[in-house]
Image (cartoon, rainbow, N blue to C red; front, side, top):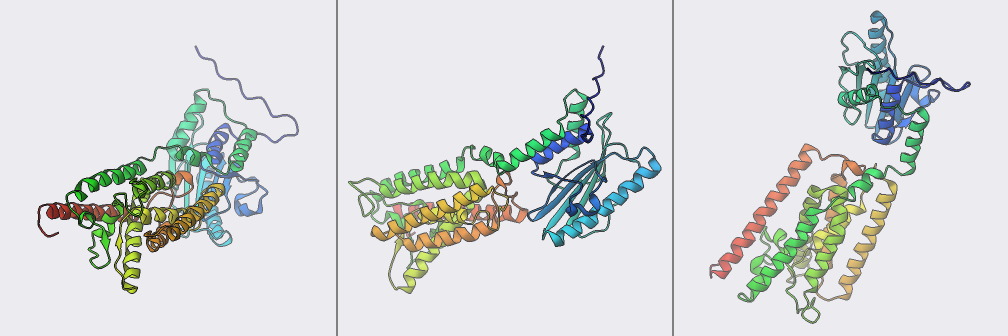
Length: 441
């Protein structure tokens, strides 16, 4: 035998009544997970959505996306409930069009949640294509959710709302408005850094794989150069007098075999320095941007660095043999340099600022090092940094840290880069195999 839960105590005298429990429960997700702010019904920015129209509301007033989520209890009269919701949707569409102008937003999403059944079928209100209005009706007594207008993306889904309703029916206590307000303040005070903090604790496997590739190729270099005096060139070193297309990728995995200008007592400092730099910089990039953007940026920046080296060598009428991953690594620094500028504007300010300072400092150290040590290709470093900066203006950080998911064309472009790079490395393998076999490369 089960007993019904006692009704919640009335609010103290002088305080307004609490909004419905389900509205408070969903609002807790809205302020902590979806980064919205509780609205004051007296706020003039709400326009027709203010006043006593909604029992509880949350919104986003800044950035390129305006958002409003409102909760209300529909009329028990079916003849009134349907037209009333249709009028709310039309008002929401007008409000969204206004935010596009007033806020300068690129898109506006509105979700209206009716805390009770609403009969009938709705059609989307006429509005700008950038304004999306969704509407759902949830029965607090059963937890069933009816989708009247498809909710916009990146807002609570019908499944999320149903889960909250069933949790309350299962005995979970709903948060008070004060608790929701506190959660909002804590989220804002933390700069929305918790998702970023979680992502920054992830394991950067792609970075470790690149470091492993540098070391593995270096070991192969040592074996091949012992048999072939021209081994570096045969393996893919980039010569401006013979800039085969596949060398613009292959050269980035080669390093000075040690004992030369970059060696100290026979130590292979070139591969050690670049492996350490990739370990430091690559980890940060992979945790902020993901493995796809990390690999694509490294490969494209390596090609850009190689192109800069070839162009400058041809203009100065000199011959240069370029090897090393540093051009691709400085491209990763260029990526960090523009984080939060065009892509990733919702990245916490503290993270984006510190990353820019880090990128500037590290890049400056590399350039200064290049002037102090002979044989270092500073032109390639600058070319890689510029290429990475351009990539950073196009590709976003991960959504978890304030960016967005890659669009279809961006994912396709990344995989095209991977495929072309794989073919380039295959050409390098074929070339060295032919050289070792006495055949022309």
